[in-house]
Amino acid sequence: AAPRLALGQGAAFPSRPITMVIPFAPGGPTDIVGRLMAEAMTKEIGQPVVVENTTGAGGTLGAQRVATARPDGYTVLLHHIGMGVIPTMYRRLSYDPVNGFEPLGLVTEVPMTLVTRKDIPANNLAELVAYMKAQGDRFNLADAGIGSSSALCGALLANAIGVKPTVIPFRGTGPAMQEILGGRVDLLCDQTTQTTEYIRAGQVKVFATPSRHRIATLPEIPTTTEAGLPGFEVTVWHGLYAPRGTPAPVCARLTQSLQAALREPRIVQRFAEIGTAPVSQADATPEAHRRFWTADIAKWKPVIEATASFAD
Ligand code: MLT
Image (cartoon, rainbow, N blue to C red; front, side, top):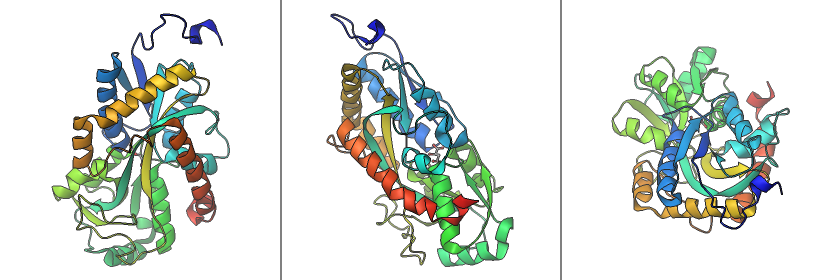
């Protein structure tokens, strides 16, 4: 290895701040999870873990930023299910979406919710489906671009209903949610880490969760299957990555910090308030992360290839 990468005698890692790249806009679900993790890791690792939102192109620009960064542990990526779908959704990328990274460990799994502007003229999923069919392309749907979970969920929803709404992409669902709150956009599929607050405050209408089970913290919301729209399920998982080639001892130190952060009472409590939970310590490992990620790519490939909206 090049000398700068060798952790020789006495060479401490980290000796300066670490940049945590978040591939979506500030204020949204990935940013919320990432900032909580960065704060907890800062305490444990003894150097600031500084969040940088590198947004755009459905999360691929942030991923590219880390895949092409110096592999020294000072640039890490907090990304989500996009890592499982981007390898199939994008034919050409300027980075390797699989081999460009060292997985360090899983972070959390977050349920999604289908929310709309508060004044939509529908009061259950069947009425919403009827309204979407009647509106056709006058109905609009916000997402965070191809590769995001909101886009995946939105496309599967449209496909299941057999409609072609107008899709309005944002750099993250943080800004997309502002348009829902302002009544300028109709629908957003988004994670409980952001939507819980607005659902509880009655600032959006919520119709269903595309999960196998109801959400423990929002048990009144039916699953899409219960509400009459079976056939698709999306749950968003998050993981931490270093660039490929980051030395093993540096990766191990980052994984150790990730695991400690996930045990922090504040993380456990805040995650619970926003409808999620840290993964087990066994899942916060490179091995479990790689296994899960590989299986997720294989799981989504046929689904994406069979979904009309992605063939456009
Ligand atoms: C975000 O953080 O903005 C979202 O996770 C993007 C998405 O996947 O929809």
